[in-house]
Each structure stands twice: as structure tokens, then as C-alpha cells.
Image (cartoon, rainbow, N blue to C red; front, side):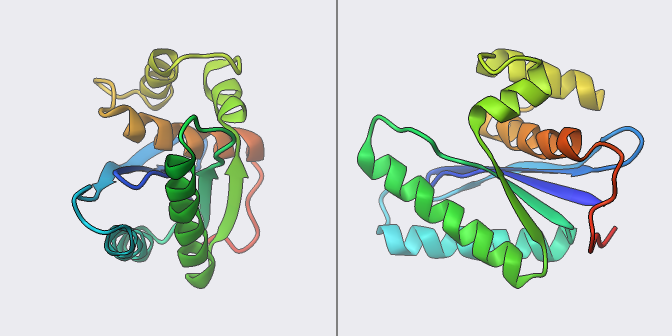
Length: 164
């Protein structure tokens, strides 16, 4: 079964796909970027096209999204929320299950404590997946951490409706 993790953002939306098996395996990771000089609706449409293509290519059973709890900038929080909504709609439309995890839940599951910083999370993602180097930028490592969080929460149980 594949789990697609998403770290939502309008300028940079991180994604990471992990195969849920005896030992988690990295399948794909990257970042969807949009041009800040473009109008927000155009940027959101670009994110939607890219997410739809990712889901179509990877066929995840589950899409795990990092939940936004707090942002200093209200405009940023709104944009992140809009991207999260697009991701969830595309996932459900493709027949995927959707789950959300708070940043603290992700840090707890991956690094062992909810107060872990980005470096600790990135290091643990590298370690857990046996990667030769850390994933960059941080949005990518964070997205893979969201997928790993779901794997940790489901343990060895299979998810109903899993495609793989």
C-alpha cells in the first residue's frame, strides 16, 4: 500500500510517497512550486493539476495531510488551508482515504517527541528510510514525515480499500 504525505503550501507544497510494508520504503518525493508573481487562483489551479497527476501516477491508498494549526500570517494560513482543501478533494475524488495529522503528531511519530525541530525530523526520515542523504528542501522531508506518521499510526494493519 502506498501512502502519499503532503506538507501543504502555495509557494512550495512538499510531497512524499512511502510504501507501507514490513519496512517503509521511499517511492517518490519532491516539491510542487508555484510562481509567487502569479494570481492566487492560477497558482491554486497549478497545485491542483500537479496533485491530480501525482495521485494518478502513484495510486496511493491513503493521502496524509499535515494539518495547519497556527500561522503568524493570516494570508499564509488561508493559502495553506486552500491548498489542503484542494489536496483532500483530489484525493477523495480519486478514491483515496484522507487523514490529517498535526505537526506535533508527525514529530512524535517520526522523531519520538512533539517538540522536535526540522533538523531532527529530517534526520529521522533519512534514518527510517535508509536514505543516503537528507531530503531537501525541508518541505519534502516534512511531507515524507507525514506519510511515515500514518504508517506508524496504522502499524501492520492494512487499510480498507488499499490499492497496493
